[in-house]
Image (tube, rainbow, N blue to C red; front, side, top):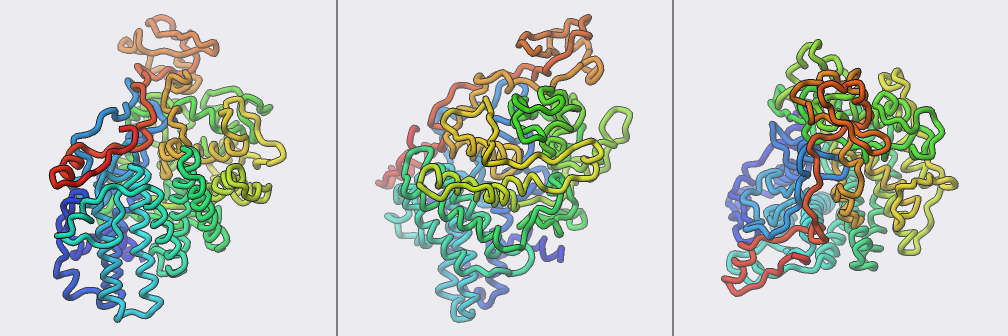
Length: 617
């Protein structure tokens, strides 16, 4: 079975080996391999479809490649702070925005967590659709034809959803562009609503026609429904919070809710494993929460490097900050400010482990670690036995925990995202579009189902407990809540922040669609520049060096800062200050969408066509 899984994710079929296009202007030829001796049966078609998997379902990528990979090195969100100046958002139009490659995962804009101005995969999907209709259809049953057409339309809709999330308006191509069709090839951008309406229709076709089961690790009705809930939620909430199009917002959010319900009502998936097992297991074959995953195996030389970046010893120049840690609820289901449990207001790591939601223990090491710039060392993707190798007196970790030799499986999409997409879509529909109100039963099916996951035995031994369920009749009163966000929506957003830390859907996507990129202005709160409450002498004595004189600092409760002077070690008790951390440059609304490159606009102009620049750029 595993060899079949690798084939799906890692094979780049010969028929797809033609040269890649650079945006719209350069396109791959329609090779004789594709047309003359292909499209004969489902085996041929499946081979073509396999070429899409590696691009769209990256997982932990392979080798040392980090495109689309969830790890501290790549994370750009308000959850993470790095030493020095925070990553600045682009503030000028780039010379070029087109990608020179259509290789798997190569088309990537980190600041927008999505593809470059590249229509390579749109073209492949349109080739898929046209060949099914014109060549394969006589060779297939009606059921098989509709299934594979659904697969092709799913990939087209998926890529357009990603392009729209990055650029807003984009040109929509619903057919293969012929070499001499310049008016179509050089068309201007279509309104995002027009594009997403076409995506909506593609996705509707998918759920009406794709197979319920096409084999393990193959697209089916439930996997595609999960992705559809993600992208319809993004677009529906973006249109709402940016006040663009309320009618379409309602349409897309309704579809997001319906798609999520397909998965939730299937009876195929449930929360039956602890949180860390989702991210740090050698095999996800039997994990009932994960709908789709990517498998890694050293015998096939298919490995990744994400664990090497969370193995306790590898340095983390970007670490979890105190603002993120404060978003974890106490185990009584209340924010730390109004919780009554013991040590609710303590931010020492040893107290956080037993006083906070269980996902804290599964995400952050239970000791301050100097390898992290914040001392909150992220090990979400590492198994707990990594503690056996942390410290100067411990043996070096085994090779599978180092370099690019990691073989833990990567979850691609899972039930927790589906239920949180569902409850958010339903809540926005209720608050903004007159939909049915969220009920306690709705919370029990979503947020509370997640909180009721099993706990790992290692966590229980530490004293970790499950977090109390969210009660609609007594929603938490969080003093940090934004005035324009309802208490219920605040808790839904909190749940996403904690649940999806360092993974897709990325936090930056949520901030963009909620119109909350202001959170990336770290001057808003001092907590962005702080780590845990530490006693340096007893917890991090190795930092009390000559080289850290006038560098190492802690912040007291009253906000005063104590800096190590070589003789005041006993006073070095307080919140760990992230060294040299400063805010990024000011930014405005332009950061919600990416600009197109000057070269792309010029190329259109030279041929007598117009390519409009992104709004605010």
